[in-house]
Image (cartoon, rainbow, N blue to C red; front, top):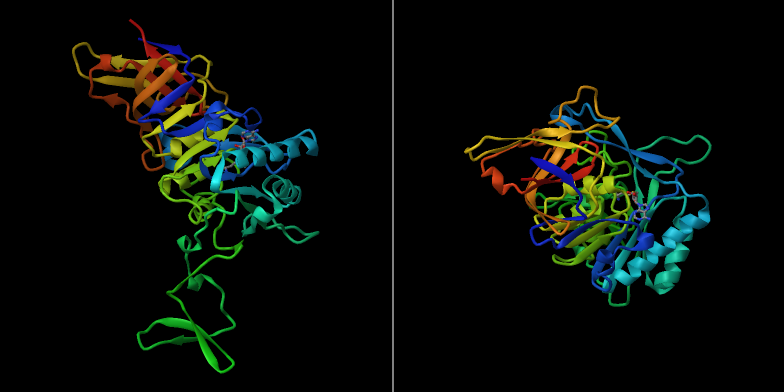
Length: 406
Ligand SMILES: C[S@@+](CC[C@H](N)C(=O)[O-])C[C@H]1O[C@@H](n2cnc3c(N)ncnc32)[C@H](O)[C@@H]1O
């Protein structure tokens, strides 16, 4: 018999990485504790589009297997009463980021044509004009076409150094030379069969071999937006590709460095940091973003600081007396976006076993649906009494905690 309860955080393994639900305007203490320790802060905030973004999430085993059903849920609102309020957020993001960084650190701010200009002035003021490193143009083809002006097909990513000691190693992001356009050059093949482009200047021949690396400039055209059916897609609107974040992080971080994203959304920067073996912390004011980000991270060592939902639900379990097995049958709960006649097992996207001490859930096992594993493990061969508490994440991203009674 399990009873719903409230917990304020979940700890996995040594809990060293962080996912925090909170507002950067009232910075949670867990993020403040990283002041002066961080090598890279990446921020992809709202762009002031005036939109209400949604997120789509597969529902149940069929949803994860076939892509449908995948109901819509609100993701976040990119709406501000006026420009002044929006600029207040940007100023705060820049100021907090500067505090977080250590001397060798750098700051990335991702925006588009709407607010890139005032953002540049804010960052110049916060970091100092001399700390400006790049205005990266991330160009892509996706989106509609304009008729009354040139189509707006790029985002702007500002890069600032914390101090003159900031580190940057361009050799960590080689791109194949073939990716560069060299249409104006003649082609050739040498005695070893290596292809090259060549140009002759002042009687001297310059060769550019296809298999030699080159390094990106500040206009990136070789990373596209995620396609509709991209397996990387989490369903969270405005999700960025991991490749983009990897290119941003690689030249400025090393394994073990701290990476922070103050508007982490679905957690793209965190996944990139995880792949590069960095420690990471993500902040977002939307609890659904935290649930989505949690699902895509593989780390065994994570603290999730996010209160659980108080919307009532009932955990359905089966324990046979004397048998070493614990079965979760599902979660009885309601949500307007869930399909009619949805079954309690399909309501679940993930669950964990563990124990609760002083409002903290210490997890020992986690099971989660994914496109690769749409079926959720529901039965454990273990002494049922060893399952002291269960955390669930339902298909709408609501996290709940349950504790064994009696
Ligand atoms: C453009 S999205 C980030 C998308 C993310 N880079 C990804 O790849 O999924 C912006 C995020 O900022 C969050 N956000 C907006 N205002 C915030 C605030 N004041 N504090 C923390 N997060 C905020 C929103 O909830 C949203 O998830």
